[in-house]
Image 1 (cartoon, rainbow, N blue to C red):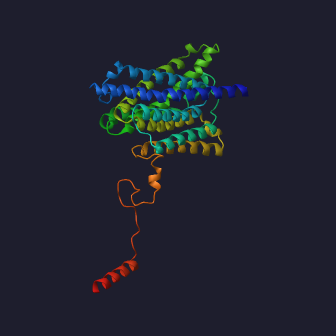
Image 2: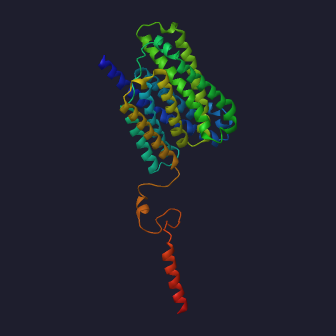
Image 3: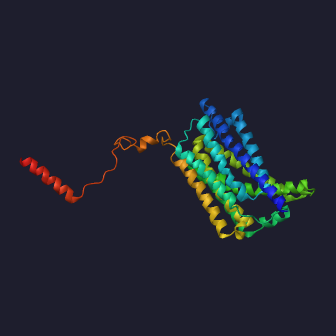
Length: 348
């Protein structure tokens, strides 16, 4: 049994890593397609247009994302959500590196350090990943979904999503990148729960259980279709209006936070964690956030390894922009002494 669990772990880990590669690539392909449409004068997705449906690059990106999400789907069937989801940071790395080559979005040394920190944080989170309660059947999943805590969480997610979609997005969506990303993220927490349930159902189906007669299986499938449709629509809007290097990392942070919250409420895996496991998981996630902050906050600063000697040179012109370096102001006694010297020279 232990060997089977370890095999499931490695299968889930491999699927999660391959998923990140495909999803990270999909952002670049879809952005390329949207840029081509904008150059042709087509109505942009951010303005409500759907011309991207005729662009093959956008479809290539969608297929790549579909393959990635399929691998991600399978990964959730073999491993806990709190193990699979943090590995999404690799998609940020893939997207950042590819965007520097194919979209001319410069990746400076801060961005490279941010990518490395994201990988380090993901590794720490994987090592300390909490073990969720065993959910091996749709009937067990149904009991989890009836939990009052999860019901309250789901109602809050749906309510906040409706407010964002109908009240906030029309007014502030094109001014603030967080609006569209928040919609994708909070809805994404429910889609991951649906994926987890469907993955369990498919595993049961291959083992000979009559899963297709269970109404919960179809309910989860319909809910997943609705959630994914909303996510794709608003992610397209965000990608069309804002820089890929901004959308991808911010989306990762909010999406991962939402999924971890949902997983903690639904599966209650945190109750069985040790103190060092909790500290390790939180530390890993904060490391990822720090890495993504470096990747995003300093993306417009021209700083590379080649230019490092310029910053270390002890010349008054080492600084950027030609401003004088900081110098301490003279104290009162030194100023008075200088004034006396000037007066003496004037008297001579």
